[in-house]
Length: 237
Length: 103
Image (cartoon, rainbow over all chains, first blue to last red):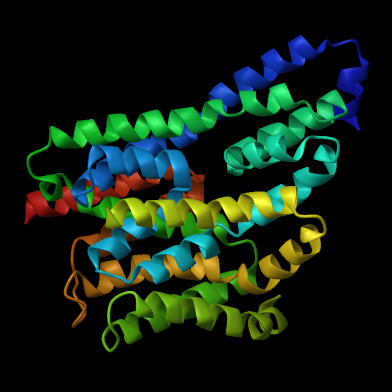
């Protein structure tokens, strides 16, 4: 209610957009830091600068990009990588579903274009802005793309910085992959049941990793999580 | 060329998750169902990637107690405490480098 009142309280659309730009620039710090890290990791994984930038520009999904670097290094089948990419990004469905009611009068082509930059930051910024304005503001939505631009540029900077390091493992840069994966897990866990299934699934993946070809233990972990979730919800909520 | 195709497929898969509820009428309900049943697999996938990478190492034939174990543990602890991703990754890198330097 307080957000809705702001737009009634005499603020012009221009003022609200300037506020949105400042918020977007502040929030861009996170994707920029992450993009730098991805650039370092992509260089260590043997990707070219062009491939690293293309991945950040077109996939534009941090966790899935980090995962693909690990799986590529293990020689995992492409179908597994693509399937896991979709699975890791399922939360985007929620973001898009939440924005959809605001965009019923927006042209289909415009909505299709807007989807490309939909991510955690753009969703949070755009929804707050729409609520302040009291309607969908398409110009405002594209302002939130500042975070996406920062992500891509930072990937390039991180990649070029890594090129200056002769032995990445001496600096501990091989810890970037697993640290990023483990920390991102915490961001995605939203309930005790999710924590329990995640721990059990990871344990299963480690045991199966001794028996199965690379890539398959991760798929098995996903299946374990899906199957155990109803049980875990009943046990711990 | 293979990597280019893989990036294109990854981009398509990600785009579908972003676009479906925006461009397909009635996809909202499907989105809710999918997230409810398949959503828990996302953190499990990331945790599995980290655990296999840290505990089994590149060979994936036996358990390996490498500097990555305490490093990722420290990164996780900071992430749990401060929810700061870049700083947590930096701690993981610093602990790994420090252990290797001391060894």
